[in-house]
Amino acid sequence: MLKKYTRPFLYVSVMAFFLSIIISCEEDFTDIGTSIVTNSEFTTGDTLIQIEISGKDIERVRADGIEIGGVLGQYLLGVYNNSDYEKIEASIISQLQITNDLTLVDNEYGADTTVVTTIDTVFLTLPYQASAIGIENGLTEYRLDSIIGNVGVPSQLNVYRLNSFLNTLDPQDPSQQNSFQSDETYDLDPTQMNVFADAPLVPMATDTVQTVIRKLSNGIPYETETFTLSNNVPFLSIPLKKELIKQWFFDQYETDNFSSQDAFNNYFRGIKIQAEGNDGSLVSFNFNNPNLRPAIQIFYTNTVLKSGTTVIDTIKKSDSYLLDGVRNNQYKMTAGNAPQFGNFPIQGAAGTMAQIKVLGDDNDNNGIADQLEALRTKEWLINDATLTLYVNQNIVRFDTIATPFRLFVYKDGVNNNEPNPSQVLDYVTEGEDAVSGDLSLDSDKRPDKYTFKITDYISELVSGDIDYLPLLGLKVINPSDLPVNPVDTIIPTYNWNPKAVMLYDQQPINGTRRATLKISYSKKTQQNN
Image (cartoon, rainbow, N blue to C red; front, top):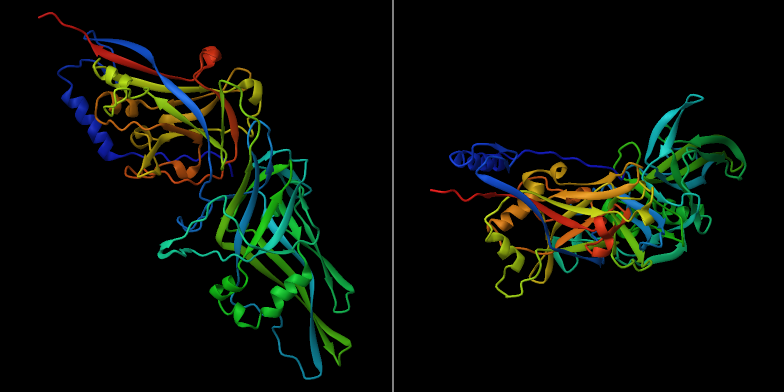
C-alpha cells in the first residue's frame, strides 16, 4: 500500500553527545531551549541561503527483492499517463512456487477403470489492496486503495512465459548476489498465456468472485462453484489458456521438471504480466500478505470411468502456484511535456528527481563552497535550517491521491565515479518525523508545500565539522530510504512509489512561492570588559 511508514527511534550515543554539549556550555549560556539561545549575551537573526535546483531523470531503480530477502513490499502493474510527468507502464516478473505433492490422480483404481483429467478453468489472481467500508447483505464492502490514474480507462495486460532465467547469483561473479534493474529486458515465449489478448485492467471493488464451472470428461458441466479470497477481498482475475497449462504443467507432473523447486525454476522460469497502453490506472499490489498471495489457480476434475464409458466417480481438484521466488518490476518510462520555466517535476518509481546546490560554488577551488566559507567567519550558532518547496497549484490543484504524501532529501554524492547516495545527518540524529518533508495543505485543502528541517546537517557544515558538500537529492520517498540505525547511511535505489508533483524552483519569477533555504541563528554579542 502506498502509505506512510514511520520508524521512530532513539539513539543513546547521539543523546549523550548533545547532553555533553549542554553541560559544557552551562558557564556561557544561562537560558537554552531547544537549541535556540534567548539570553542577553546573544542576538538572533535569520537569512536565506543561496540554492539552485535542477531536475534530473532517474534512469533506473533496483526492482528486485533479492538483497532484502525477496521482500520488496509492493509491485506496480498498469499504466499511468499524466502529460506533466513521464508515462509509466509497469509490468511484473515472477517465478512460480510449486508444492511437493503435485499429482493428478491420488487413488488407485481397478484394471477396468480409467481416469480422465479435465481442466475446468485457470486464472491468475492478484488481490487488490482494499479497505473495508461496511457490510451489505452479510458481505464486507471494500474501497480499493493504492491506485492512481484513470480507473475507468482500461490498460492492456498480457501474460507470457519467461525464457530468461532469474538467477539469484551474479552470472559474472557467482560469489555475489544478482540484481535486476527496472529497465531490465527479458526474453519471452511469444505465446500469450491469457485467453483473451490484451486483457483489460479496470480495477473494481466489486470484483470479489470468480465462477468455476466443473465439467466431466465429455465436456458436460456437472457443477458450478465460486472462488473467493479471504474475507471476500476484491481481486484482479486473468483467465489463462487451459491447453498451455496442460502442456506446460500437467504433462510434466511425473517428470524431473517437477522433482524440486530448482528443477522447476530451470524448466519453467516464471511469468511476465506485461502492461501496455496510452492511459489507464496504475495499481500497487502487495505480494507479502500471507492470506492474500498472488497465484495461478488451476481447477480440474478427474472423471473415473468404468469400461471406458460409465462414470463411477468425479473428483474435484485444484492446484495453486504462488508468484514467489525472484520477483521484479519493469518500468517503461516515456517522457511527458517539458516543465515550464521555474518549475521542476518530482516523480517516483523511475521518474524524475531534483538536485539542489546548497551554498553555491567553489570559485576559488579550495574544496569549500565560497558561501560556506563566508558563513564560517560569522561564528553563528545555527538554531534552525528549513528547506521549503512550494507546489504549483495550477497543475496539481486538489489532487491529494496521486500527489506524494512525503518527499525525501539526501546527499546525492559520488564515490569513484559511482553514485553514492547517503543520509542527511538529521534523519539519523532527529528521525524522519523531525525532518518531515510532509505535504502540507492550504486552507482550501489544496496541496501547498513540503518543508524539511535539516538543522543538524547545516550546523555541521557551518561549524566546520565537515567539508563534504555534495548536491542534495530530492525525490519521492520510499520506505527503503529511511535509516534503521545510526550507521545505516547508504540509501538503496528501490522505489515503488509512482506518485508525482510539480514544484517551483528558486527563480524570482515564482515570488513568495519560490524554493528557499532559511536559517535562523544566534551570535554572541560583543561584551565590554
